[in-house]
Length: 412
Image 1 (tube, rainbow, N blue to C red):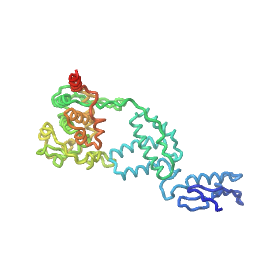
Image 2: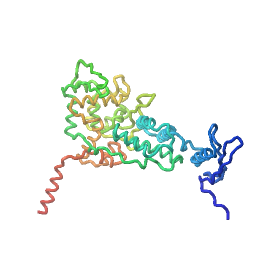
Image 3: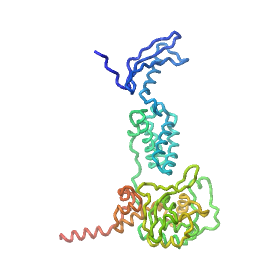
Image 4: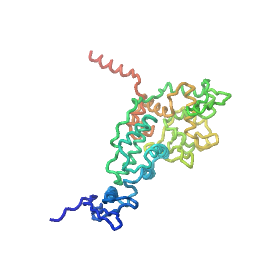
C-alpha cells in the first residue's frame, strides 16, 4: 500500500546527522504549496554549540514555519510591522483615498509604529494589541482609539492575505467603551437667523482666543485694540462665509473650494460642489476635483435668496468666492481659528463649523422635506447617516401632543 501523501504545507519526519567538522544537519521532506515534495536541510549555525543536533533541528523547524509562504510575496511571518505598514500604505494609495484621509492615517501610524514597528508580524499578539488600543483610548480618546483599531485591522488583513498569519488578531480585541454618544446638536431657524444678524451688527468684544498649547507655553496676546464681533467679521469675510454655510450645509473644505465663475450661477440661483481644499505634504493647499464622498461630487445646490444677495455684493473677478488676503486659497484651519474666536465672544462654544451642516439638515426636516432631500443636499451616500447623525434630536414637538389629543378625543 503506497504511503499517503503529505498535506500541503506539512513536513515529514526530521532526521539528524553529524558532519565531520562536528556540526549537525537536520533534514526532512516537505510538500510545498505547488504540491511538489522537496528535501529541506538546515545546518548548525556557525559558532554555535550543538552537541546532539537539537540546534540544527530547531533552525529547520523555524524555517518551516514560514516555508508555506508564497516566496514571490512581499510579506511573511518574519516581516516587520514597519514593512506591513508600507504594504498597507501602498494599498491606500491605489484605493484613491482622499488626501485628508491619507494625512490622518499617516499621523495615526506614528503611535502604532513606535509601539510595534520592529516586531515581526507573528510576534504581535492580540493581548499586546488590546493593551495598545486601551492605552490610546485612555490617553488620546475613544475616537482616536477606534481609528487606530481600523488602521490595524486593515494592516493585518493584508498579513492574512499574504499568509503571514492565519487569523487577524484585531478581530478578537475587546470592545472600546466610551461615554454615551451625544445627540446631534444644531441651531434652529430662529437661532441661526439671529447668529447671522449678530455677525454683522454685534458690538460684543471679540478678543483673540489662545489655544491650550499657546497658554501652556506662556504666550500672550499683543493686541492693543480688541474689535467687536461685527468689526472682526467684516475684516475677514467671516459673516459671508457663515452665511454660505447656513445656505448650503457644505463641508468647510467644499465651501472654500467653490469658484466664483465656474461654480456659482446667480441667474439660476445655484452653487455647484465640484471639489475640496486639501493640504498635501510638500505642496501645501491645493484644490482637489473630488469631494469627500462620491455622492457629494458635482451636486448642484439651490441657493436661498439671502445667499444670492450676499454673493451679488461680492466682487466677481476672484477665482474662489472666498480667498486669503493675498488672493490665494483660504486655509480651512484659518477659518476654523477665526470661528473659534467669534463663537467664544458670542457664548456659542458648542457651535463648530460642522454644526451648520447639522443645522441645515434639521431645518430641512422641520420644514417637512424628506430625509433623502436632506441627504442629497449634504452629499451623503446613505440616508441613514443624515437621519441618525445630522438631524437634531430631543426637541419638543407640540404637534405630537396635538395628534394624541385629537386621537383620544375621537374615541371619547
